[in-house]
Image (cartoon, rainbow, N blue to C red):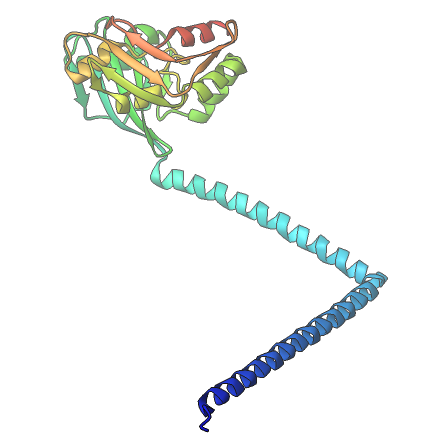
Amino acid sequence: MAYDTNSIYDKRNNVCVTESNEDDIDSDLMNDLINYYQFIKLSNFINENINNIKSSPFFIFMLSVFFDYFNTLLDNYIKIKLYGKEKYNLIKDCLFSNNYLQEIYLFNQDNFIKIEDININIINKNYFEETYKQHKIELDDESCILIKYYYKEKNYRLYVNYNDIDENVINLPLNIENMNKEYEDKYKKDIFYFFRNECSEIESAQINEIDIKEIIEECNGVFNDFGLLSNNKIHVKYLMKELNIEMLESLELKYKNFHLDEDAMELLEHKIEIKDKNNYLTSDIINKIIKLN
């Protein structure tokens, strides 16, 4: 009788393979146990030595000295960094003029012209009279000087009205830091807070459906007040003259931030809507806040 030797060979091979797998598993398990034992042993050794070191007064003393020295280094590093930053900004302002005049324009009822001489230090009534006379422009109720200036990487505008300047003197370039101190002494903190936090961002602005957001952001000024805190109001007719607009349909402006009406305890959209060209940029909410001073 013939026997199937292949089937017997396959079965023995399978048995051999199975036994080999079991040996490998046992070997891996033993290796894991040995590694774990070595890890525990090393951990115990480190903990024992750390405890011995920590119990040493000399070690504690040296550690306290080290931390004191490190704190001193950190304090000096912060002082040096702040001092260096202050000096850097001062040198940058001196070399690159952080606050300088860019352009000057003259307004009256019939004219809007740019003048070439911008090397001026003050604007007062005398400057108005001499400059308008020099450029053969008549002084009238709409006479105004527009100053475009640059401050801390942003463009701004200052409108100086002839009828409102009286005996005041505006020094150029503008000393923003001194102006800030003057406003802090003159106005309540709530007013400063209102302009800084609620009027700093403009969402949209149009005149006769023409987008003027960029112009309005420049008009808003460093203090976000449209010149109201310094009594340098921005009349709509000045913008119309610059944009060559004869008839005003409407000027609409919307702030990003809402205003909390504390009386009604509700949030209100803050908007400016003007249909009279003789009016200046302001809102009912702004007028209400300023009257609180």
